[in-house]
Image 1 (tube, rainbow, N blue to C red):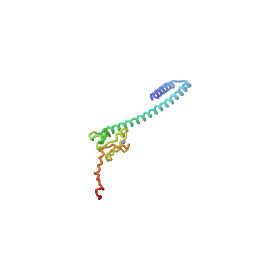
Image 2 (cartoon, protein in one colour):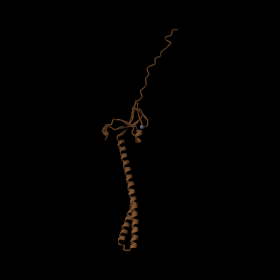
Image 3 (tube, rainbow, N blue to C red):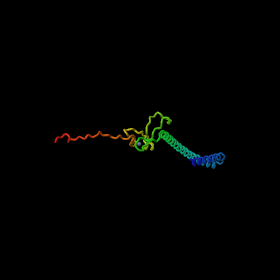
Image 4 (cartoon, rainbow, N blue to C red):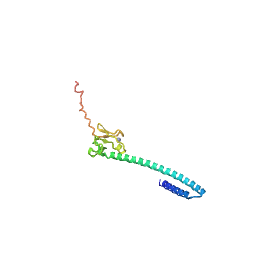
Length: 169
Ligand SMILES: [Zn+2]
């Protein structure tokens, strides 16, 4: 845009000089030549002005796009700061993002406690883990995190029934 502005300034400066020369010229033929040259310079200045305006409009659009992107990133960062990585469950090293305590939240502090799927949240997707029995389930990536030990299935003692005892020999 600086090059276009420089060309525009030069064209306007030349046009001004030609205008001054035209006013002082008494020779009709020379005046007509200066007038033609002046018209040409004015047309050039108009073209360059159009290019400068086009460049300004393009830059303005880019500024709006970048401003919007900055807002999105700030909102994303604010959302991420509402959570902290926490161990979940009692089996192995399983982690999820836990909503921070209400006292640490700047906004929406009345949200109920919940966990988000760590792999999904790291890629910018928010998925609240749903408890299903002994597992926390992610509805987006379908991962299951075991949150409680599976209870041992205890069978009642097997009764050994001897069919021999009732027989008479
Ligand atoms: Zn997930």
